[in-house]
Image 1 (cartoon, helix red, strand yellow):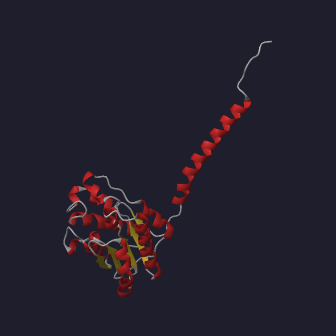
Image 2 (cartoon, rainbow, N blue to C red):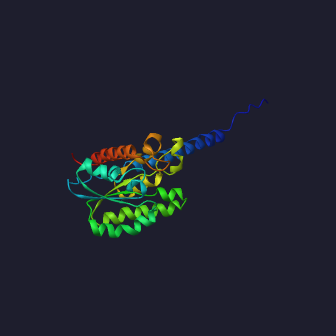
Image 3 (tube, rainbow, N blue to C red):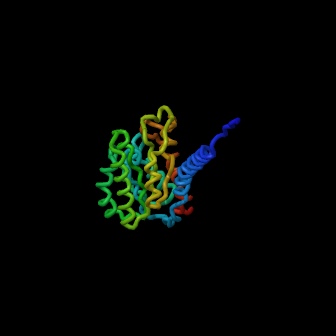
Length: 228
């Protein structure tokens, strides 16, 4: 008797099942981030002209590489008609900024706090988990005071500015999503990746701070914080 061998149906079933399992896994990986992106922050309340706005940060906020009147908070004040308090301290980390925030909130009672901090943490290779926790605490504390908050994303590796390979650290997107606050993306990354906009590898010049302030103003308009 001739015996004709055919592939067992069980093998085909197993192959078919494996394909479906692989497709399901890929779908799960793809869909989860997309679902997370749907949670946009609510429309912000417009901050009126003359209101006090606190710009919290480090040397990029204080204006190292330019003059005080060309630092981004000074230019932002001119562009918005807000009273922008420059609370940038050169060399400060997220932990140091968090330590001085309570006194700043009590002194100025800002309607809006612009948080741009973390660059020194990255340059000093401090714990990313600690930096994230500090930045989140800063934003949460400012919100608890009754102020609105705009978070500014900071590049992860500022020393690569000369090579033009800068991108925002992922923690800023995560924190903004968790707290449902607006985020200004690629502001410092765009400036510090451009040699003509830098005073050195990690600081902007007057033209760089001008570009940052203009980009920030656009984000403020898009989120509804600025209406003019």
